Length: 311
Image (cartoon, rainbow, N blue to C red; front, side, top):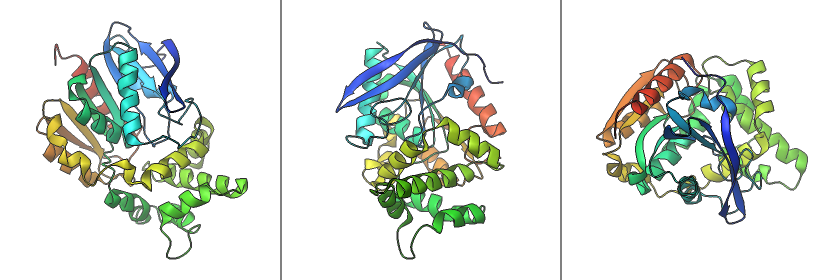
């Protein structure tokens, strides 16, 4: 069961410095247990249906758009926009809201940022539910760019045909997105976004793609995502695994689609083996949180975690 018609009781902008203001919303129970939804991308932003996983009577639901994403300002900005900036933005937002401890809930890039935040500020995290695990490594980027051709050869061909032979696809796309020619920039941003969402679900229709493209700002999404991917997500090599011991006291639930063509399912297993206090669930799903089995497990696990008497 997912939850519907969750009302927002507060919203606004928080100036986090460096010329950025992040948009946030508070929903559900103001006196409930805090849960922070960490969106993916990078650059994806959050939407109203991202709140559907949380019992609004149990949780004080915090949603926010990361730098340059969604309704945050300036839109699409990659200046002063790196992983550590986002980590500090989360801390600033929680301090602003006077929240000392929270649950974290995120998928894909949202799992990455949740993990990096929890590594730095473990004392502020009551528990985590993360899915579609991405640890920000070159190997995972290669998996996303190349391995999807086995399951989605048509979608992969549409993406790769815009890359000259011998060029790195990520770097070429990012360079063309920053082209001075508006038409060229938009073409590559749309092509990248189309590729990602087309391989995210086991069953995906053109109509669903049209709905997604209407809902998100695909230009800022694609630009910010490639800004991170071409810079190794601004993380030292194997940073998360080398520091995963700092998460041993945080109850962590990992949910991973076995047929994920965006994030390598093997990484969920490796992460689980490196966090003592973690549980791993594989689902017969792709990458998307809306695949039925994944959606059901996400909802069950975050609400089960939230109903524990104390952490």
